[in-house]
Image (tube, rainbow, N blue to C red):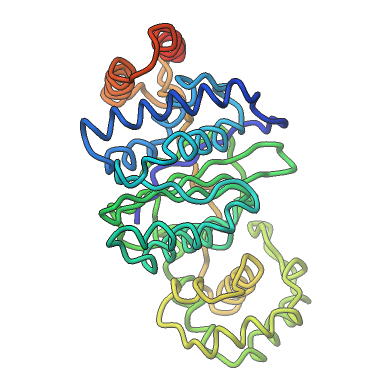
Length: 356
């Protein structure tokens, strides 16, 4: 699996005005139709999994370019915009913000009944992408938005967003299922963020030994792990560790550890998959793996790029001219082919040019 990007955006509260959202629905519908007609629904998955293109799309639709609301509003506009033509274009959008995200498995199942796609595979991808970004990667952002896109051919993409209440920033996570290799090892190919922090990164390549150790530990009797955690509680933590046993509460983990033990997982992905396994369980296993067995996990923030195309002075990185050009051409072509009024087209193109 390839996660194609992460974007940090400042939190902006409130809702998009109804008149603006209606225009966004109309324009997003036409852009989606134009791209699908030209390149098929899979092209939409490739484009929305690119945080740069997704950001540009939000600007074209007329939303505040640097607001956290761009994520939820653009996804909502796409979902509502293609309502009624999903089967015709072979593209389906499920989930959304808050409680709507919890309906993702049901919505996947309902749409799958009208296609030849196996819903179990898609539901697994949906759940694991959320599990990884809450428990596998503990970067301080709590997920509150999960939008799962898939086509009639069974290919998929995910856009989800988390909130950090301390920094008052939101972080957007992009996933693309075309290059699935592992849900738990270096799933990022391009991670976009203006803000960096510290956290437990169990999906980093450097965490491979820790993942193996956690898997081995999960097959132990739960009381042994709890015993070690209580013993660790009396040790002085090295300053390099950004997590501690105080946040874990060993006695409250026994039920979850019993569930993992019964599952007898073969690898870390199976550990993460177990119902009830969350951030605290993974922190506990990682802590024991590190301090008792010497299997150190990674604490690096995976974010490496700004969501901008790059700066003329080479910061935060040199301008990616090819990506820059491709985004301009694709969105411009889609706007030209969109079946909307001339005024709407002109305004949208102006917004695109202003963004660039």
